[in-house]
Length: 101
Length: 473
Image (cartoon, rainbow over all chains, first blue to last red; front, side, top):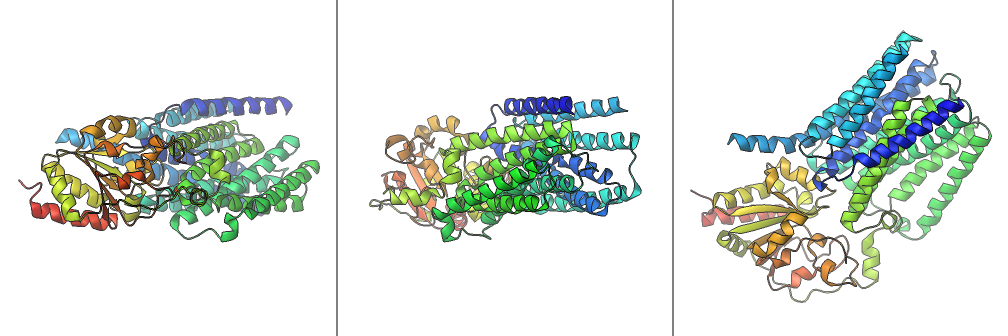
């Protein structure tokens, strides 16, 4: 338990550093899509919701809580990735079309 | 079997990191977003494989999983397809709030059923407290942000007074009391739990409600960072390292992005969160002032000047987004281009309703990506520009930011449009920008105001240009 907690803290630290490192210089153009994409990733709580459902051991309230939580998280994930893709599709489409002219 | 899950988790983390990295470059952004989506699917797959290999997944569990997946997924997909590009900030806020809600619910599940979820002991209780607190603030804060941006909600007067600070401090104290109570009792305190849920939900509302509409994007970005923190805390609750890494990455990245946005607006995060709307303080300190030397002109004159120009720069702003005039603007610039006039768009880092939003809106209206020039690129080109058309932008073209050390705007990066030969400012009236500060640009000799709604003015302008035969072969 203790060692796994310490491990988890290390994971937290390294994950934070990685996040700081990855967003070094972002052009303002991409702020909105980046925010939206990062937002979709924060819907990773689907994993926690799934765990709650699977470990419910038949307890109905736990199944309901887990399922509602899963719904919210997936709304975030699916909606977030799709809307980000919609935005980015508008950027990437332009240069390609120009070459065709 | 465990090895397989470790490998899948590692690959998923790697892909998520690459995804975030790729999202910060225009060329790789779309692929990176898809990569992150694949990583997410992989993570879910890994989790399912793990449980199928160990405890198995009951039929009841499967049905609830499918129920939640279909409901959330379908609603998310529909929302993502239907929402107009102009409402992007609200949409991000809505999605974000739901992510926070998910963390909150998982933490509640773990608090009520600690034995099923192995959420016993000090670490679990502290993680539950953090997850509930941050999750609830993220949810209510995001929903308030969305409602304010949609115009469904305005700030009640008492929320703008100093009294709100006492209200929020009282709520924060209540959260602290509940948290201490929960931790002291090892998590078995239903009163403590509900007090924490209610107080932190109200705190999310109390902190977000007084913030002005123009600062809202910063708040959304900050709340986005919070939802990462909430996810990481949920990771501690259920013991998932993948969740901790992903949550921490989003939390840290969101914080940086928030900082970048604040820099672009010359606002500190503290003043955004606790300063309330900027306009009130600026007006009180005499930053306003009357305009004396305004030249206004008709759309017809504007069209004649444009016809004679060789180089035109468009400065789109918040007002253009509000009037949803980007498509009409594109038609105007098309006819100018057809007449051989070089047209560029000067994009201030915080143009639109949030950074980068203007680029999305113009891209939607089919403006070629290469014509969007960032501030540092376009600023040296203004002296060689014949006509600048300012559409619904105000503070970002205020020369005070460079010339007047006493101005509250001093130091904010601005577009040097006054260096162009002629500047037309399309504006509905003489009201101040969101900062409430007088714009010296409007009084300059080479500036003319064209009053009217951006969409209507551009529509008229298009008509005038057609009459003049601009852009016809």
